[in-house]
Image: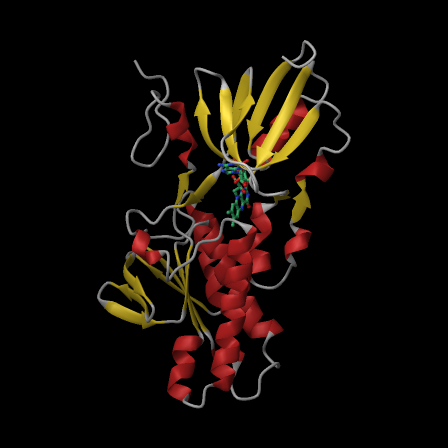
Length: 292
Ligand SMILES: Cc1cc2nc3c(=O)[nH]c(=O)nc-3n(C[C@H](O)[C@H](O)[C@H](O)COP(=O)(O)OP(=O)(O)OC[C@H]3O[C@@H](n4cnc5c(N)ncnc54)[C@H](O)[C@@H]3O)c2cc1C
């Protein structure tokens, strides 16, 4: 209790954590929101940062600023590393201190997800995913660098690998990224280079499912596929990536040579579920609830 008010600790300043904090603005509680970054990120527009349409600052807002007027809320910048359920406190590492205990009466864990490589973590080095601002900036740099390298490359046979962009996973993020890269190469960059023709770039969207946007209604999948193909995206379905390395991707025995492969398939929860032992998590790190 703080001055008689219950202490609510919220870990994560994403959509979930911030919504929880704001919903408590008139409640007789003291809210402590902890995040390892100083900003709230509007993830649905990450692909626009990754394709140079938006600047990072346009999709990120300081968490302190968002909660500035909420007098019952305090923000802590730090990484939560665990929960001590017996002592009812979370353990936080900050820039200069480790293992600081922040006590709670009520705890909200809203730590989001990361990419899942479905057991192929070795792919991550060659095929980064898109979940945070740093990922988006790094992918943006990688895409732009590929054009710069191709422009500087004397050997035209190397242009093809540099100007082939592969998205592995045709869920919403893969579809958005494929469309945005196609627009980037066909419109934005079309007149910017002298040796290479950006419109000759190849954008390949792969998925092991028989259709893109598998969780959407079938007519929507079909419509999205047609729109992507009209933009020049090559949609290849029915096979996932067997191998990803610094030369590109192998799909159903065929190598697609590419210097820019982006992982847009699959997510896994943050490790927060493990902090709640003896509650169990499954192999995908999801908490098993309603255990009998
Ligand atoms: C590229 C992309 C496009 C998307 N497009 C859409 C869309 O169009 N429509 C839609 O509805 N949804 C979309 N989503 C999904 C949506 O963004 C997520 O469902 C939503 O962000 C989840 O909110 P959250 O609060 O659970 O987690 P997050 O927003 O991920 O927030 C988690 C927070 O927890 C913090 N955190 C994590 N671990 C720790 C720790 N140990 N210590 C301290 N802080 C920690 C992180 O820094 C982060 O700020 C998209 C997601 C992505 C990645």
